[in-house]
Image 1 (cartoon, helix red, strand yellow):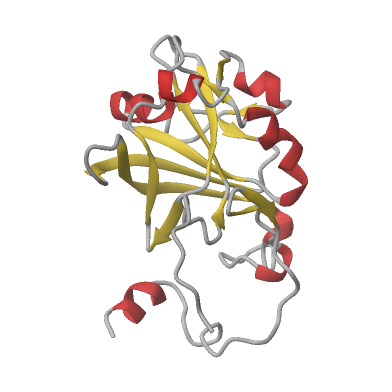
Image 2 (cartoon, rainbow, N blue to C red):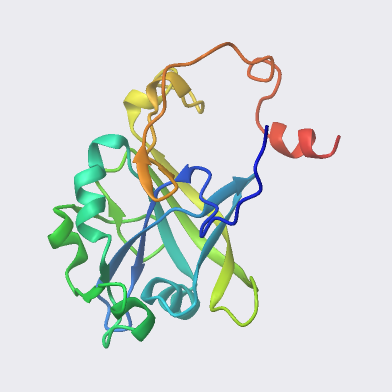
Length: 212
């Protein structure tokens, strides 16, 4: 039996991302978000155009998508109600957001220099994706939400997550990303079964699969 409901949000489970960008004065900004999905070398991010992160991305044309594992939940939680916008937008102030210039310091996270973008990476995150802005897509009217298309330019992975030291493949059994499920933090459970797709699809497999 199914019941028709009208939920306030539709967060059915997406990965948490710490997005690092550069502010207008050259200082770094760091913001958690959880509306992200990947396809081939691109990523789509759903955010408010009023946020400091989006304004930085529009101006600088770049960012780093840092993917935290579940052990970084305390650090992400320290960033949750902070914003780099000053003054704080009214819509965020009403929800308890406060301005904070030193996001890395408050979260207890470490800046690492990136290779192809100016925004720093987060040392403590197992995955860093340096990215450049491709296009902003208006999401709905009259909301400020936008879908931000970025292209992944450089991928940094902790050695321990690789299938072997010389591999370009990540071992999914070693990677436990932080998941946001209806605004609550979750991790992944153990592998449930072997997928028939895993041994079949290699590099470019997602593109080929979506052509079918």
